[in-house]
Image (cartoon, rainbow, N blue to C red):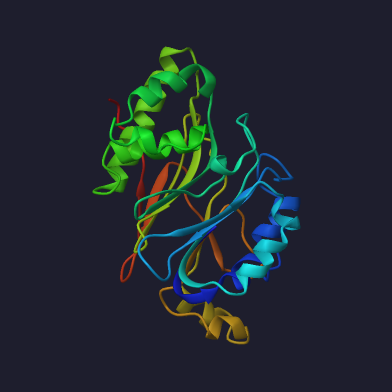
Length: 272
């Protein structure tokens, strides 16, 4: 889940929706696994420079520390991720969101055959960035490839080049469909999201409808009155059943949420 908008308490996003990300960790309706209990993480922007992160290897539904701090964090931009491991260890450094400088990154899906292609991919990471890799996941490797290819200057192009490299290396190792991903990344001001898979059957991803439109559709829903016009949510699964509130991100698409004008466009990997 990615939230961008007026400052809001983290607990209002994490715990209060009917099908909150906490509920999804136990009862995922659209994910590859129904239960996601291999750790979690949240990241947010507030006081100081750069994002703060809080991660744990505990199941998110059973972490009292998260409940304690969620009512004290007020932020205009929040990332939240629950993890179901695709083969790498359950450890804090493998929990999302990943952070580098001003940027955060989280990924749902997998680089297939990562054990076989890992060496080739990590050798493509810029030598100045390589020492900052903390964990052992395919998701963090993809993040550092995107940083290598210019994420901080042009996220659309950088992720396209990173995915293109992963596909090329995967095909060289006989992997038919190397990439399965939905990705969110941010610099604290804008949020970029991506939905793509090599086989054209990507994990689910949704974005929220413009608040002013929702207010017109549901003038009696009090919570909508408190949300600013710039409020946006991007989620793997809708947080509730409010009619007209959620829109599916099209297959093979990328988008950006930013003040003033959001955008969605087709996404295709860029071959090396």
